[in-house]
Image (cartoon, rainbow, N blue to C red; front, side, top):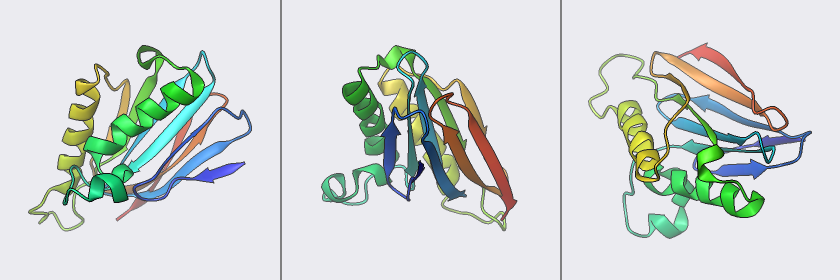
Amino acid sequence: MELVVGMGKYIISNKEDDIIRTFALASCVAVTVYSAEKKAAGMIHVVLPSLLHSRDIVERPGYFAVTGVPLLINAICQKYGCCKEELYIQMFGGADSINGQDVYKVGMKNIHAVKLSLLNMGLTIQKADLRGNESRSLEMNVKTGVVKVFRQSI
């Protein structure tokens, strides 16, 4: 079954027939996690590095790297019994602005915030496909953990 991760959302699954997808990662960052032992996978589509308002932690916890990444890791570990240390972690996106005049540097800030969130949990990224001037869409096979990347110029 196709499972689509919207902006600021995450999905976890251990159903071998599932494909987890997200679309149009530009400055946004997707984190994928996979346990080969448990055959469980997850993905989050992070939009911003940190909370804008305190109410965001309740209303949109997956929207932000600082709250969303731990949410994804904890969810897959709790639901499927995965150990954090067994997770194969990948990160995608964080593209630069189309015109090179991005004073906010959201892509870079998202990348940094995701890395810091993982570091705070004692985790590291095994593979990354970051920055550049392309939008990325992803397709993750739950059975194998393989992530296919589809690129489009921004």
